[in-house]
Image (cartoon, rainbow over all chains, first blue to last red; front, side, top):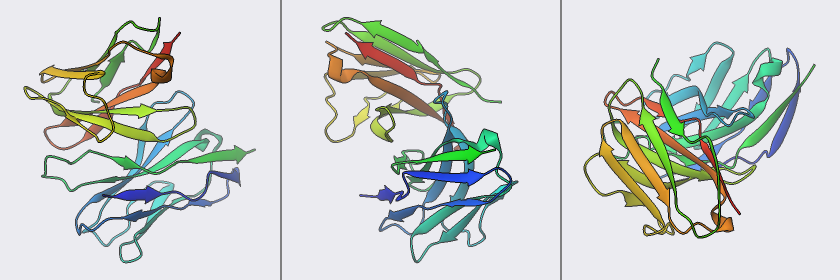
Length: 118
Length: 114
């Protein structure tokens, strides 16, 4: 079974600074997807970024980027130029590969609460 | 863009009653939907996978007779909490998988059992 671990229950950052959220996972599969989701107080899950394990290039979405280390099974999220609206709970998640019936069956980490100070 | 709607967003019921939560994909066909449960300040735990036209697949430890899932059409899956008890109070979230593979989450439903 796959497991996802986020070892930082809470993190804080000053507005305009950079913060990195950690995530490690365990799987015996070679192909899979990894995600970072943001959950603001509204509880709506918002996709931040997605990475396919077969792609060596780290995914980037504007101010958000990941450091994907497949051998180390590490998938950290870097938020640059932090904004007040970035404050939320962030979840790292694992999915079986696309093309299979289980794609989208997500295993989530424990979450990291991010506070952004003005 | 694609939207997944959950209804009701909040529901309060008495212990022993049953509650139905709907997850609807508004502008796409969802062959598969997933149901998650989230306790306050905790992570999302997968409860079951719902496939249109077939029986749901439940995760280990989830009582299928208590949490009835029906996926009667390509746009609607329902979760019925039967004989609800206070310990069933939680936030229930669905996600829908589009044929292309994209995933979309509903807004969630907060269940409070008195």
